[in-house]
Image (cartoon, rainbow over all chains, first blue to last red; front, top):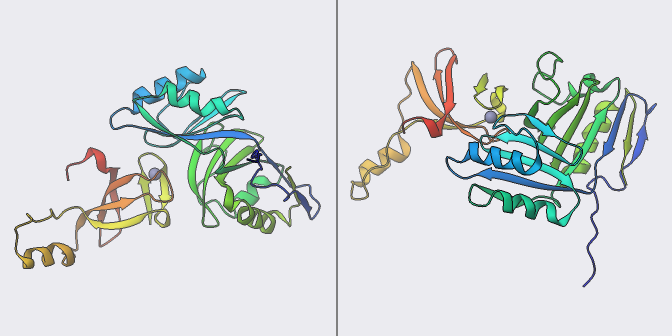
Length: 194
Length: 86
Ligand SMILES: [Zn+2]
């Protein structure tokens, strides 16, 4: 049997549009990913065990907790989207740590992640995001599950530069990039991927 | 119209699916055909505050009970359906 090799959702889509200077989009390929869904009445215990396992302050809220090796995003009540280093043991480790309190579903082949930055990023996001991203309202560590151009996304703010990240089902990566190129073209866009 | 989701914050109603009024209860299985037709097809349409089920399908995927005035679309409350009485 052939060995399967991870291929990011944006593989082959790297390019410059316009000046290339306004927005920088860098694919974060090769991540392990999982959804964690607490069993009925176990949200608090699941948050505590998830946080304990990863060494992070995990809350049952639309917040991000992150270390150099893992990112936990609150995506719904008792529900988290978790990213880690590409390691076959990462998701299994989560499942073991959460046995009995949460369902853990491997999404490593299902998510595509971009980090977005650049001086023109805020005005570009305004064209597709319908929630208030004013720096006073949406601060580093905030997470939003919403849609951009009819594509369901998980959007989070990493720092005040601002740097954002967006995760979406990998088969929509090309469609999302189409929106990004149309919206960021006038500002200039560079997409970096494998 | 914006709905204040308890998990996500205020969101455009486009992100939600409206399911309809909270209740009525499903009739007993031995109830008459008329009772089932009424349960399935007929709803009141009051000019008043109503309690409705909305699903935040393009957000946190939580079911909400939304209190909405049908005359003004004023929403006075949105709470997780799991915490409210049926
Ligand atoms: Zn919500």
